[in-house]
Image 1 (cartoon, helix red, strand yellow):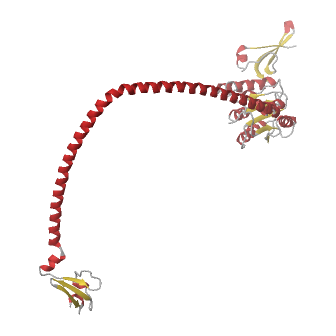
Image 2 (tube, rainbow, N blue to C red):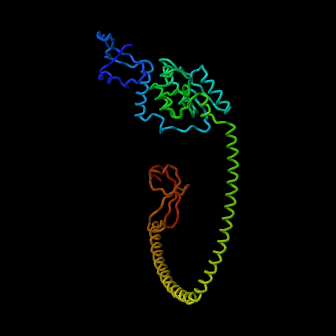
Length: 370
């Protein structure tokens, strides 16, 4: 057995500090104490190794994701009661895929499952799984994404403790169910997903509703709805009857009140009506007088305007112009007045209106020769 010791300053540089039973790699120098024949090692550098190193990396990533608010607590989204389509991200071969599909279709045979295959272990697994989750989230009609694989060692499950996989789950627009490993296994993708279950079979139970249970629930709901409608109808009829009775009493009171008010108003209505009729008769006579005067004035003004217009019309008429010694030349065939000599053609028949009659002429030359 070798006694080992190290300076505290070296120990403080290890983050996180190793826990009892953790596997570490220690570097230092061996010392031999002759008086006691004791060999010891002065440790100068110590590093986590094996599962301890892996768990330390997981803890560090958990702290970062928690600081960003990406862990499940407080941000879980509920699963739909009956998803249209379920995307299953898992290995194309293996019991996880078969367990989920078999149990989901046993519960609801019509469930639509699309398998998005990916490697689930090895150096290439983190990027491959994250890419598969992205394809699953973007598939048409997908309401739920299930990420699953069987159990394994800490090293086997490290792909599901990786940052790409956790961020892909956190960025998925639909709820994600994580079913990685067995009951005792806990990965970071379990903490980021909306729902964490222990096995692929449990994921099927969480995602796929039982058809028999749904039928029972629907039957119960129909019965409850029928009972509720019956109670509502009875209550409505009872309230209607009460309101009809109240309305009858209210109408009786309203009629009695109206008759009382009408009787009280009758005595005042007669004298008031007489006064109104007298004022209306006076107003009518006054209005008739004003209307007669206004009509006479309008007739006088209209007669004057008519006489002036008649005199002006006589002055400006063609007959008045001809009577003063002028003549009017017209085209004999159309009767149109000829105002330009240049418009007259040779041989064109013309009619000349004079004071004592019309004269028919024929143009011998164009442009004014007759």
